[in-house]
Amino acid sequence: MKNFFHALRKRPVASLSFSVLIILYLGMGFAEFAAPYKPGTSFADFSYHPPNMRWYSPELGFGPQVQGHAVINEITWEYARIKGDYTRVHLFVKGEPYRLFGFIPLEHHLIGVGPDSDYPLYLMGSDNLGRDLFSRIIYGSRISLSIGFIGIFISMTLAILFGGLAGFYGGVTDWLIMRFSEFFILIPGLYMILFLRSILSSSMDSGQSYMVITVILSFVGWPGTARLIRGMVHSIKREDFIKNAILDGIPAISIIYKQIIPQMSSIIVVSIALGIPGFILGETALSYLGLGIVDPAVSWGSLINRDISTINNLRNYPWVLMPGLFLLITTLAFNFIGDLLRDVFDPYYKDRQ
Image (cartoon, rainbow, N blue to C red; front, side):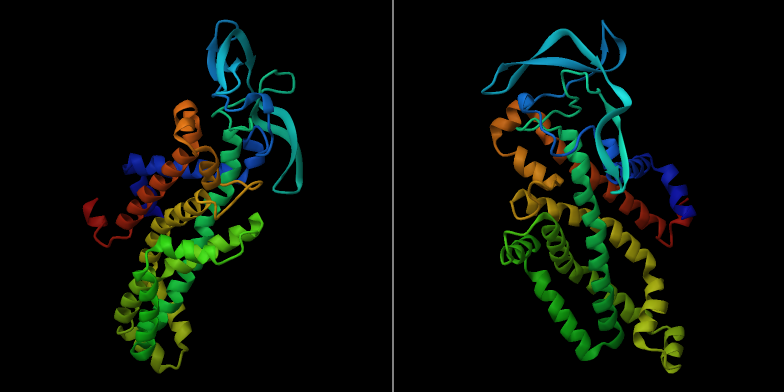
């Protein structure tokens, strides 16, 4: 851990990525407080409203403010700014009541305009129903960001189990497990995911869809890591301390998890860091194709599916690309952290300092 933070200070991009991930996961954990509105709160008169946050106006001076807009075309939802119509944006403002963590009743939000404002606060614009896109992104991160950790946990458990057994026992056990894993590797991952999802019920609620997507992504993602672990276990088991443990009659599972796996901790940590973005992108792909999370639940993939539906939307309402930008930033951040971890656990890393 000390080497990690030492290396983090020397790499500005990795340091920035680490800070971005902390902010994203804090926002995920405190979504009710961080978001100005609930994800389903709709302002019907403000469909496809552009971002209306300003930092300066002659009337109010410097500071965060909401700029008033008027609709000039209800067909294309074209807006025009109203000169001189500004409302201050406040921190810790009283708004819609909610329960933080499901049981703490609160009414204050991190940022907002209060009940007296004629216009809602749209940090990143609104969607076709006038719902705040920033709030929906914050709430959507709960699915998109958590599915990576849950999915990689299941996937790594399967990879360690099957890869460890194949490498430790060898012979017929090794052959059967490796042929089974190669069956999944030979089939393109996206096609396998779509096939597995399509044979299940399409009428599942959001909670069931979340669990099914997590299991499917985990089931498809373990074979490659299992092959890597199998090769390392096959090499480590020849060490003297492993041979002594076998002669002492220690069960194979205990040897694998207590003596062999710790020797591969660096590879496992790096695999986890680099594997999480794959699960996030997998959920996004399924939700974008309409096979994942659907309303009233929200994820980054479902936001992309709903808002980026036509070229006309992209041309007239470019802020609907914001969920995709969050997805890109998160993926890049995890990859930069994964690269850093790979170097930190490199046995020759200290020699390059």
